[in-house]
Length: 81
Image (cartoon, rainbow, N blue to C red):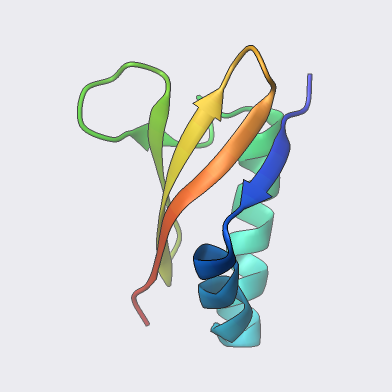
């Protein structure tokens, strides 16, 4: 089942400010995470299946996976150039 993606205003602003190619790459990676949150991400800290890291060539995102609510929340997003 597909998860829904949720952004805060600060993380959405970072995504919106990214160059087009980097933004598109992140969007595709986030879409893949919504289809398979565990397979498309890596553990962040302890592998609890809830807090996950998503990395692309230009960004690192920390995600909170709500398995029961089917919502992935972008907790932190860093553009790394």
